[in-house]
Image 1: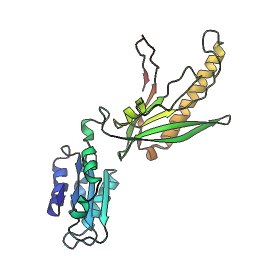
Image 2: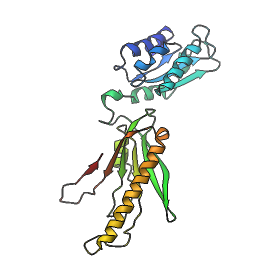
Image 3: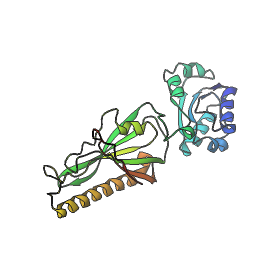
Image 4: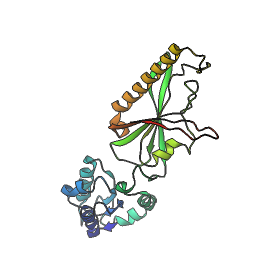
Length: 260
């Protein structure tokens, strides 16, 4: 954090040591927009300025914010309309400032490897409709994460061979656990073509093949939805992973099926 000339120092230090700082709060300062690409993908910024600053023009903070937004950096900007140069008094009064600072981690040192985010938001989207049945995706994303082009494990929820498909997992489930690591997780529902039936050896092969074909179609349509909405969801269309979660049975080692 830095105030006035220290605000300029914050931007300068980020440019000189882009991999050292996880979060920064320049107040009543400014920087060089041409250097923003050096740290736009690593640091998280919250910029503060007073609109009536008669020492350091607020335009200097505005142009840094605009430059970082164009680079899709994780940046937020707060400008106080009737405040002059001493905008740090207002910034320090922000109840969310310190919790925000200490909630950030260096993405280059842990994204996809450990939990970086405290909360995960879940949104539900319909991706297809079959015979009057709406098929949906539960999309889990790290709350407060503005990163783009994130990896998406498309998690196909556990079920009992197309007879039951509870895609909504409990709060401590794998979707939220993986989401806190920086992934976007899409848990899909699919057609229950074997609902109320056996899927054992007594089921004709033709019915099983038909069931598999329907499942492939559902997965394909869910994938198309993710690709069509890549910008809204902030995902990398070239980094989709399809996962089938196998339910663990007592006394047996879990089997994991993963296809990339």
